Length: 246
Ligand code: G3P
Ligand code: MG
Image 1 (cartoon, rainbow, N blue to C red):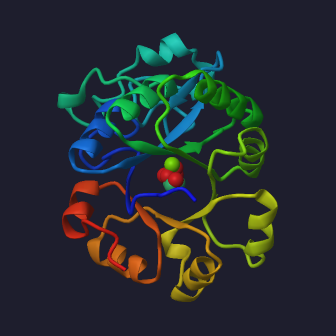
Image 2: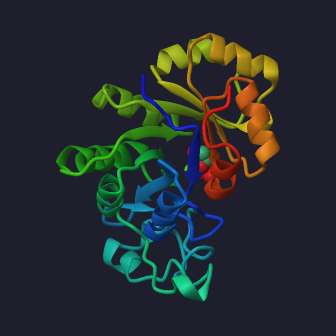
Image 3: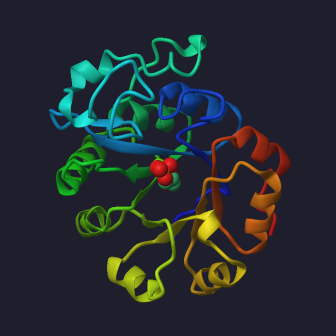
């Protein structure tokens, strides 16, 4: 079973640096986070890039859907200036650069496969190609809201752990989880109750929650048996909760 750290930095240390950039991953590492969570999708020419939204407007100086721009165009955008002048010129990272950075920082990643309108299978194929050809692959836990992506990753990279990413817990979650062959459940913390958390934990399933920036809430979730919390503010949570407390 994969050892997921108790605190994972959501899109990097996204409270301090522009989300899903190498800068945000470096800040997360500097604050003591062992892992980051990040979102991967495809450019128009099928290159794996890290960005959360379907479109460029919120986190870059570009416009339009991600999948309408090729890799070179995306790489020339400013993905940091929207956050702060300090980060002006920060780029949209490629998956390759991200893997290399994390590897040399001795960090790991929860890599969320986010088709955002592109073909999930095509995206998975490109992610798999990258993971197979890179010489610098850090510990990786895949996750996705897209069941086709989870199934594809399980089939073609069965040794790679893969989390089932959920907004709410389906009633028949045990059967669906077994059918997908996933290795963890990742769920919005607001959808969790002490009873549903106990059900998951008692079934021996690692339980990852997003996105928690409040220390007391994180402590409560750990008391329910939650394995890991994903946070925008790893510095604050790690300061208050340096180790998994329960
Ligand atoms: O993977 C946890 C979380 O990142 C899922 O939601 O929208 O932040 O990618 P989102
Ligand atoms: Mg995500």
